[in-house]
Image (cartoon, rainbow, N blue to C red; front, side, top):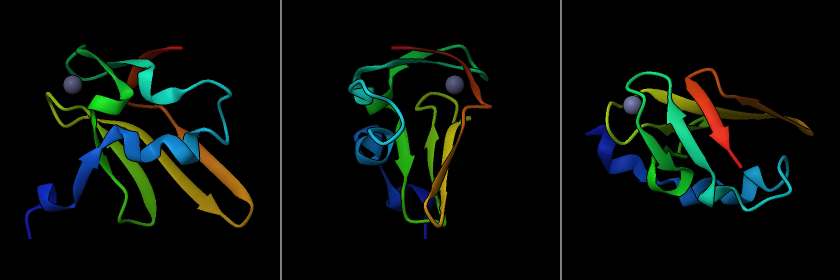
Length: 86
Ligand SMILES: [Zn+2]
């Protein structure tokens, strides 16, 4: 199966992100650490059918954000992101 079949847009991460950030995150701008493109989080590609949720750049497929839940803790990694504008 093509990975794209499992892809949805970044709006799918809104619920989980609302637990961490007080603002509406799908409108936040994210700068890709790979290609430098800036897009609204909701426009990037999300993969939610995995042990964690992954957001990838819609231009170069760089992993921008990973969220994993273990018990009552939510871990958020922004390693692939240059910056996020809230
Ligand atoms: Zn990119």
